[in-house]
Length: 170
Image 1: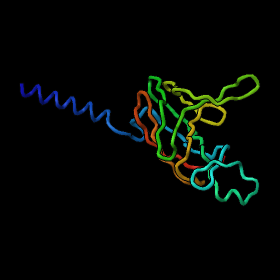
Image 2 (image 1 turned 90 degrees about the vertical axis):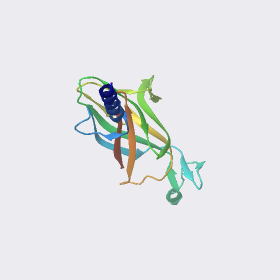
Image 3 (image 1 turned 60 degrees about the vertical axis):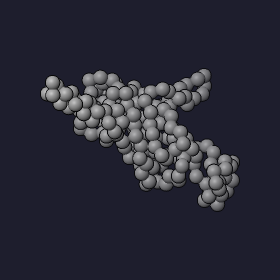
């Protein structure tokens, strides 16, 4: 009876350790992240303590403003034999983070939120302008070219994958 308890405890410990915490993408993961980067996304800017203001009218106005939204791009490779899905992205750099795609509606290209992004088995998906991407809304700090942003990508099968994305201009 004691041997059965020891084996049961061992199995529970293995299951819990396999499911716990974030892990970086690497050789042991079927998911591999290539060239993650963020860029400033046009739109509202803020001045002072988070008050939205119109776009600056002269270059000197830009010195006190920061973008409120940023887009994240990368290549996600799946070396596994089963498809996986990116379900969400977390970071302390933004108040809200959403998965998006761009679709043609009539003569317009429209950005639309999606519940997940499929990464095919043995394939890849490119998150890029005009296609799938991740939107970071309500930045919590200034992002300057060269800065690094910590993010956690949550996949359906691979679980949590931590990455660093560089801030750069396209």
